[in-house]
Image (cartoon, rainbow, N blue to C red; front, side, top):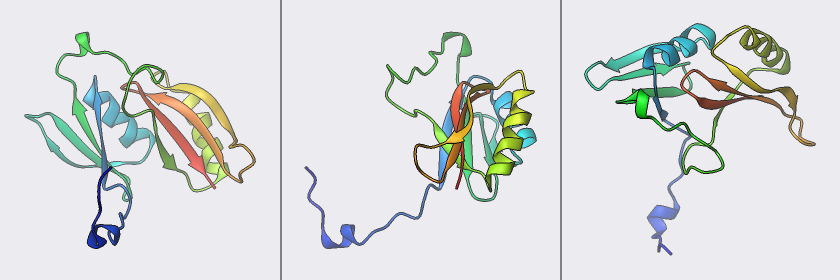
Length: 140
């Protein structure tokens, strides 16, 4: 157990600054966020390679895996790490519209359509996006 000092107890985080995702095809994944989710590219490091994209609230860092032929896809029942991440959508109507749009894309797999989250006044859907990352889309 870690001992904390009074000054450490007074620190509060302000949310996620950015989320880094390693993907097999950085171009395909960044294109998905830019073209389908209205993100903008805000930077890149071509020699790394990395692309930085943002919707003005969330910034994602996309890293290109070195050898996509030898990658191991994430299995939520066997791997430690990112299970999924969730992006908040403005309202249920826009969530449903986005779901309809994502259904038309060959490189997105819908896990489930928008549905109520238990007894909460929240709706969400889950999909796998280009790069094999699970993305939850959620609204109040």
